[in-house]
Every structure is written in C-alpha cells, then in structure tokens.
Amino acid sequence: MRYSLLYILAFIPLFFCSCVNEEERPDTPSGNFEALWQIIDEHYCFFDYKQHEYGLDWQEVYHQYKMRINDNMKETQLFEVLCDMLSELRDGHVNLSTSYDYGRYWTWQEAFPKNFSDSLSRIYMGTDYKIASGLRYKVLDDNIGYIRYESFQDPIGEGNLDDVLSYLILCRGLIIDIRNNGGGDLTNAEKLAARFVSEKTLVGYLQHKTGKGHNDFSNLEAQYLEPSSNMRWHKPVCVLTNRSVFSAANEFVSMMHALPQVKIVGDHTGGGSGMPMSSSLPNGWNVRFSACPMYDKDKQQTEFGIEPDHNVQLKDDDTAKGIDTIIEAARKLLTE
Image: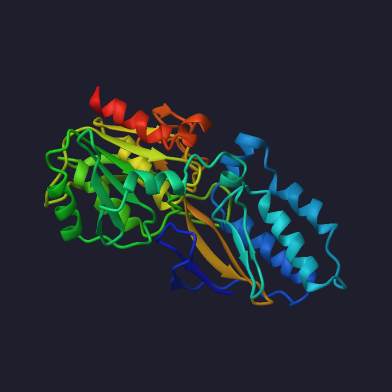
C-alpha cells in the first residue's frame, strides 16, 4: 500500500508522495476492513486528544464494527460500514473515496447554523467591488476596508496584496471575511497573515508522527510567522468566521488570533488542525486521515475549532432587512 503526506490543508487532496511497505491483506470485505483499521491505528494523530474529549476507544471501535463485516456483503454495504467506522473519529479530514461516493464527516459544519448568507454578501459587495485574484475587496461607506476571501485554494500573489492594501490604506480598519472558507493552500494563508506582523512572531506548534504507537510523536516544533518584506497593515483588523471555516482557513484564524491588533468575530470555526496523509486499501479505495497535529501559540489543540473573541450570530430580523449582523458587529468594533 502507498502513503502520501499532504503539506496542504484542504478538502481536495494534493499529493506529495512517499512510500512505505505495509502488510498485504486480501481484497475481501474482511481484508479491507482490517487494512483500514490498521492504517488508522498506526498513523492517525488525535487518539489521545479525542479519547479525552469524548471517550474515543479505537480498540472498542474495532470490535464494534468487526461484527458488521462478512465476506458475502455487497461493496456498497462495505463502504457504508467503513464510513461509519471512520466517523467515530469525528474528523473532517478523514475521508474514504470510491469512484461512486465520497465518505466524509461534515457534522462540524452541517450540525450548526451557517451564519453566512450569499444574498447579504451580494448586498454588501454591490457591483463596484474590485477583484485581485482570489480576493474581492471594497471600501464600505464608513471608511472600513472589506476583503472577502472565499477559499485558500484560490492563489494570491504579493503584487495582489500590495495593490489591495494600497487601495485600502486610508481606511480606519479592515475586515477580512473568510466565512465558508473550507481551506486550501496553507502558503496562501501564511502569505496573507504575514502582512499583519512587523517582526518574527510565534503563531503555533507542529508535531510529526515518528512511529506506529498512538503516542509516537516528535517534540513540539515552534512555528513562526515572518513579516512580509512588502506592504504591511498595522491598523485594527477583524476576521469574520463561521463553522465552515476549516483546515487551512482554521490555521489562518489561529495565526491571526496570535496578533494583538486582530479580533476574531462571528461563530466558532469548524477546526481541522491535522495535516492529512493518504493511503489505499486492497480494493483500491483511497483513505485520507490526519497525521500531523498542529497547535496554537499556547500549545492548545484547534482540531475542534477556535472560539472567536466576539461570538456573533446572524439575526433573522437583521437578515430580513438586508443587514449582516456579523459584519455590522465588526464595523462597530473597528469604529470604536
């Protein structure tokens, strides 16, 4: 079986491949079940954390789902059982892929209010906004700069950021709206965050799996954000979040949360702090899972998301009037 480490936090796997040898198992329902359970057992990175948070017992999971496996079951039945087993990890970075379906755990966003409206976004953006690669931006009528970044999968260049910040330079404050941003290229998140630091700044920690045991990890490695050599922003900033902020976007929030002039406004983020790895089962199905845990500057887990500095929810009566409660809360903070 093949493994590939993903250095990008995203929904869509991007592969930088490395290979290790694993025990070969037969292409039968029981063989595929055993292979999947072992892959997760030896390489998943959040067992202790999730045992503490909600009592996850991976050995008990094995016995529970083993009883549902028999070698006469249909392929679709096997897929259902394996997806159910993986959902016990409660991890949005854990997926099982076939040619006909994509097994996922999305409760981290689907079980909560959206706190974002496309209709409201169109009202606030109007038709006179500017576009710089993946960024849409404008000056709101109270002289607050507004940047909408929908996905870190969309590239941004240093020239884009120079042009955007130059245009907004006279604004009294800046709103960066990343609601519904499900992740993408971590380098885009770092490139944007680097515009808000004036010196090398500790923003988090990283560990690597060093063995097959549940606790086989390297020491914590400090992660620093280096200031951009281009134009930087020193005025107050509000980052807008909701439950659909995940993966690289969650890491962007973690980095920005470490900066004194930045406030996080909106809802709790969705999480997803593990760098994913991928492997394949004997039948060719692909499995993705978290392999390298990342922490915030205080060495705290962000796998289950980040609490905002100001928890604000969209109000139905505001929405009916064409008002985005979260944007207005950020505007008030910046004008005060």
